[in-house]
Amino acid sequence: MSLRDAGDPVELAARYNEQGADELVFLDITASSDNRDTMVDVVARTARQVFIPLTVGGGIRVVEDARRIIHSGADKVSVNTAAVHRPALITEVSNEFGAQACVLAIDAKRNTKGGWNVFTKGGRVDEGIDAVEWAARGEALGAGEILLTSMDSDGVQTGFDCALTRAVSRATKIPVIASGGGGLPEHFIEVLTDGEADAALAASIFHYGTYTVDQLKAELEKAGVPVRRTA
Amino acid sequence: MITVVNYGAGNLRSVENTLAEVGATYHVTQSAAEIDAAAKLILPGVGHFGQMLRALDDLGIREALIRKAKSGAPFLGICLGLQAMFESSAEAPEQKGLGLFPGSVDRFPQDARCPHMGWNEIVPREGARLLRNIGPKPYVYFAHSYYCPVIDATAATCHYTRHYTAVLESGNIFGVQFHPEKSGPLGLKIIKNFVEL
Image 1: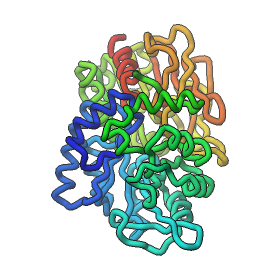
Image 2: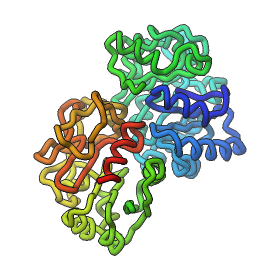
Image 3: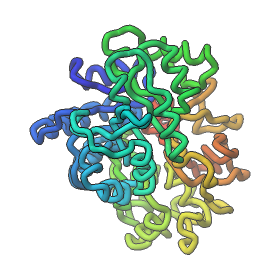
Image 4: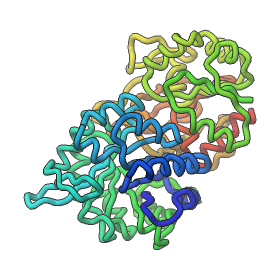
């Protein structure tokens, strides 16, 4: 679950934790240095009351950025734009904190050739790189997980891009988290089965109270997808 | 009072937050004398088997940990802290483990999605003290590429490409492969069980 600017992040994190969220992701897509100080504080306060894995991304350019976030209580950091421009960052973070703490976030958008290109800067810049190849390279460089967002479906809640998640999942041997497009329980069922994703991330569906985490999990369970139920 | 071993590599923040949440008092140490004096000990672990064991040797605390484990004081290893209790690991074949338990830690096969990262169900053995009153279908959070074999002291197993040790319990020595500090209310309960031993 990703917390965009939809309320106090610490409060939301606590609420989703109570609803049975499996992990939390804080993505600061603006990521100015002022915001990073705020983020460190948000992470520290969240980690004192929420006891599930916490991934934090946005503006991580060097190992020291990752260290501040991890020492404030995050379990994993996600790298995106800076890793595209300097892929060694993935290896540096992975060597320092372990592959399990190094998430490669990829924003992918369909191109005209039937594939997907990597976009950076919060989805504004087309890097002209093949997203599936980049995912495989990220794994080779030391990433322990891929957070894969479809820019075509992000925010519109009409379903995940299952062809994208399937392609990335088959090209890698690390967990792939699908993001972008989850609006209905069917979408989650589809991406976790046909889409071959290991996990699914959602924001709007929970922020706007369409479903609670537990209601969504109940639907997944009915469809035979193994889930952790807490409520 | 819980003594938490800081060998320098891992981030102890989440273990500390968890102990604070269950109302335990704790302190963090790197000293053999304080390990010898500990009433209850937690050995958290994250990172690389070889690096961890070398760090324990550099700090001169390997023998103190082995003494403590054999003293009967409750001793809990978490994740790599569990793996360190075995004789060796495929992650660093040249490096000796603490050797509290027989056998070697192995890597998940190359064709498996690895690390094994995420929530998975564990199957407890009846009477496991660390797992008292945790309820049915316990799901806990794992993040690891290497696994401990199932041995006599195994108190719960998990299945990921094979059955392996998720919880180990022998006298007052305990180990968990998953991260109780990241396993929600169930994880807090497990830590509380340890604190209340």
